[in-house]
Image (cartoon, rainbow, N blue to C red):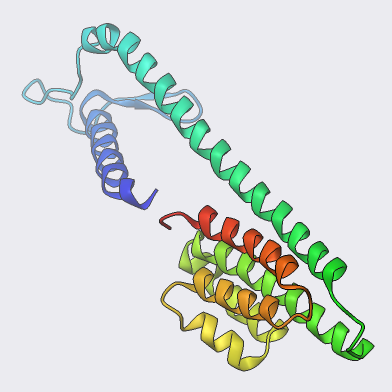
Length: 205
């Protein structure tokens, strides 16, 4: 919407000028329905108006164009919704595999808890970083920083915040967390495949 700000401001300014000018020249009706003569009513001044013929002739084409634009916008929204839903499904799948494939035979319960908690936090950090990456800075930046400092170790949070591409940095942390899990390398590769799907969903963002 920021790309249309100039057009919107220009259109609004012209519309306000036309309403104000026509009110001064041709008069106006107040909210009570009472008509008032224009303060500058004079034959030398003309009201600003456009012939309706042009709008009548162009309205079918404009209607079709609006329909096409609406369909395109809906398709883009639907594609984004599906990709976001895919990310949610794969985060659940990733954490599920991490819990199921974890080899607890040579580690303490406390170590298992810490490893899996780090895995879940790194998964959350990626999704949260992606959400911030797709949101306006004024809308989410401060909340994003507060949440990262609250949930992640300070060093990890600062590394993500200062990164040029925050989702990629969060994916790096997630890959490191997966690599540190004690499990068979084939199962570990299967979990890494889910991370690759996250990278694919990022696209060129």
